[in-house]
Length: 98
Image (cartoon, rainbow, N blue to C red; front, side, top):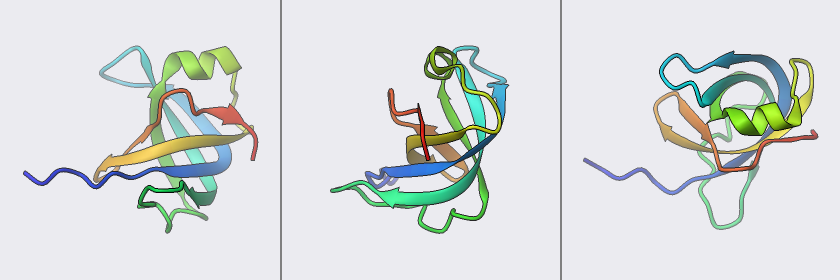
């Protein structure tokens, strides 16, 4: 098995939907309309083609709940691609902004 390439991207966009993760109650799925996919220094950006589209990001529920994020808000999230269609937030990188 090939190890995934170390990668990280700073996504910015509009939060479209927040829903529970079907398998793990401590996680949430964030549907994000992506405006930007910015590079993070020293890391590969594997999501350069995502602006203008939508992505689902898996994240720690606590981070979202503490911020009280709601659909329609602009957010910035540090993410990594862990496999085909598996985009996860980096720890403690979810914030309001845009």
